[in-house]
Length: 97
Image: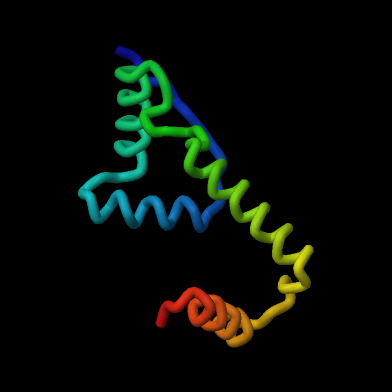
């Protein structure tokens, strides 16, 4: 079977980091890429999830909503100590510790 040549350009730092990881696994970069290609063929797609899960979208939406609420209540510029004080005040109101 003839060998095909694949050339790709990647950031040098990415190449170095990936090569170091593969080396620890006992692989060279070419072998790791061939493994990725074989697995892609076996799975008939990318061999790992490439979609935003519902949880990810939900967390982003919740964070956006919390940011909006914070801005509307004038709390968006509070520092860490002020936020902790606010939390303690709410806990005391609720009868917590």
